[in-house]
Image 1 (cartoon, rainbow over the protein chains, first blue to last red):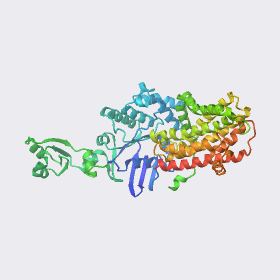
Image 2: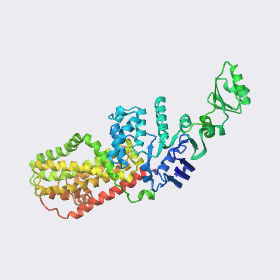
Image 3: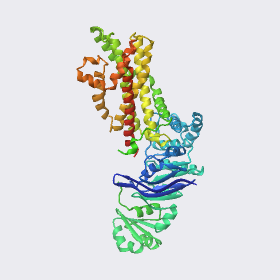
Image 4: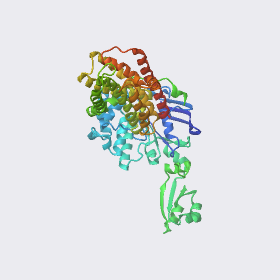
Length: 303
Length: 261
């Protein structure tokens, strides 16, 4: 059954169309990732799905209920990890879970029974009585995730869950999200980290300027949109090398700063030539999601 | 302004949990918070009441300090509700993003604003009650019938909570609240009958006082605390209720506009 259905969704602020007609379907038990550069419309899409903003046009059904009309009801079975932590600084770790459980109208006993398990899940059992200000960024993130699970939701929304975290903290969050998927939860996450999307998501959509410009499984997107081999070339003379040799031997060459990215089905000739050069360094690697993303959304900065 | 912002409020009982959240925070600091709230009105009441009162004959048929006690019950209620609905609510809404976290749960913004208004009124109820208690221990209250003033205190708290929440919905920063204090709260302190009878003022200023909510709270509280039946209770109550309802509705509309897009 579809946990979330979005059809022909539109939303404008003033003259700016932030969401310009998108369709989404999330099946039960899958992890779906919405990727896009800053300002692509990801967070607005999330807000619309949750019924926290009204669409101009289009239809949303979350857990079988029409949104925004019955959004409040639908949110009883939804967990949300917002982009910016909004844990309650007036409370301890445990109290944050307790007070948040009350907002769902859960009986005190049920909340009390769930708290130890959630603290364990978040690795915060030893910090149950700590103030929020005393927690590290990773701990706050884990607590926010635990808080989103207080109502044992079927569907979990995560808006850039690992932005600003160190690698250890990110890996721990990913492990927890996999654990939730194994329990049969459905996950909708937005991110601009390609490795995160590639590791976690069964299916992705790349969003840019309010539209979905590509979707599919991570591997499928890479196969469909990009040559399988990438050679990155660094050095002062990289551009000269590309003009003289690289652009001929690769199917496609792109430049960012002083780095040349060569895309090819067969990179042997490129590598062979680069091995003889002492003035250039290179990295030969398989194509990844980031290559697809940059190809589809362009390399210029988005602020 | 979008039409859906103007919709009538739609509440659920979940507003109680917003109220409980604030009470839980308050309960951790209840004693210092109560003392802090009491210090200011007490200093005015005792300092002016005994100091100035010694030089005055009866005011409005009672000792000056008894006169002032009734005014202080109302003014401390006003202050407490206003501070809670502005500085504290603004912290929760804007700085801590607590309201955003709450409306991600199955609680609507309407519930949040109602919970905040009810909480600010509850907290001001405690302030007003504390002043009433001190007045009673000093022998400034005529009879136990003075307890009838308690529902009035709560209604007064609601009226000022609504006005304060309007300011919160409009405010870009804490500094903004100074305008409201300077232009609304301080004038009310001075012309609504807290320190001296309104009829001492020039006619036009009496007219101004009549449209301000604090005047109507004081007009009922003072006779009740001094064992007399207040004249024309209903019109005063209606003015306070109108401020409470209209203030709440305007605050809700403005908060929806601010947060729900």
